[in-house]
Amino acid sequence: MGFNLFTWWTGQTFGTWLQTLRAQEVGKDADGNTYYQGGGRRWVLYATDNDSSRVPPEWHLWLHHTRAEAPSQQPLPVKAWEKPWRPNPTGSAQAEMPIGALTAGKARAASPADYRAWTPGEQG
Image (cartoon, rainbow, N blue to C red; front, side):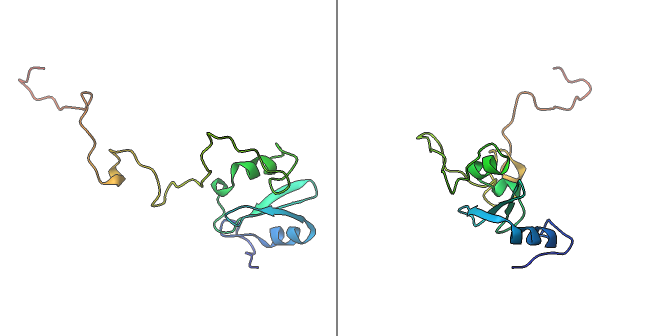
């Protein structure tokens, strides 16, 4: 298990790793993130990058003390209309882009509100 002495944005720090030795592991999500609690606190050790958008909604509720029971102990009921959760794809190849997005490589459709430069002697 690796850790960083001073940086938190690339993984767990020494202090976080030390806290996990005295904490109780509560569960893991489908992405491999591990959840702990101890001393009235709850936290997550990310399996990959430290990115809070990678925490599923049910675990988010538990981390913020909205739910007392962890999803590993009492799963949330799934509604028929709910789509499966997925991490935020912004900045990745799976990011959703509108049709006219410059990064999508397509030209935006013309609009009546587009700017047209005025030329002297032109009516309009």
